[in-house]
Image (cartoon, rainbow, N blue to C red):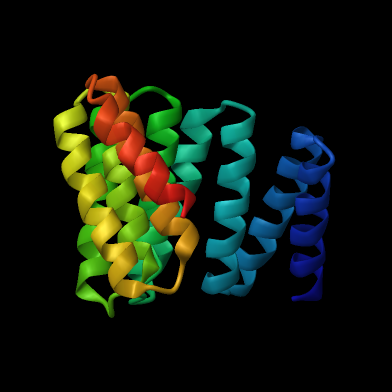
Length: 193
C-alpha cells in the first residue's frame, strides 16, 4: 500500500512541477497498485488525480475515461456523496471544451446528488456552476436564476463569506452583460461590504 501512496504523492509533485508526462506515468503505476489491491477508495482518488493531469494535457478522452471510471467506483461501493464531485469534474471538463450543454447535464446530475444529502456548501457550488454553464452560452436570464439561488444557498449556510461574494460578482457580471448597470453597481457595492 505504501508504494501506491508514494506513487500518488510523486505524481502530484511532478504535476506541480509541470511535468505532466511524468505525473501521468507515476499515477498510472499507482492505479495499477490500487487495482491489484482492490483498494477502491484509493483507486478513486488516483483516478481523479490522473483525470486532472490529462485535462491539463488536453487529452480529454483519457480524462473523461478516468472521471467516468471514478464515478463507477463510487457507485460500486455504494458511496452516495462522492459521485457528485466526480460529476462536477466532468462538468468542468465539458466547459473547458466549450460543451455547455454537456456541462449543464453533468452539473444538474451533481446537484441532484447533493440535494439527496444533508445540505452543505457543495449545493451552492453546484448551483453556481450551473449558472456558469448557462452564462458561458449567453443564457444570462437563466444564469441569473441559478446565481440568485446560489446566493440564497450561500446565505442560508452562512459559513463561507467568499461564496456570497462570488455569487454577487456572478450576478454583477450578468447584470452588466444585460446592460443593467445600476443593478451591477448595487451588486458590486454589496460585494465590497
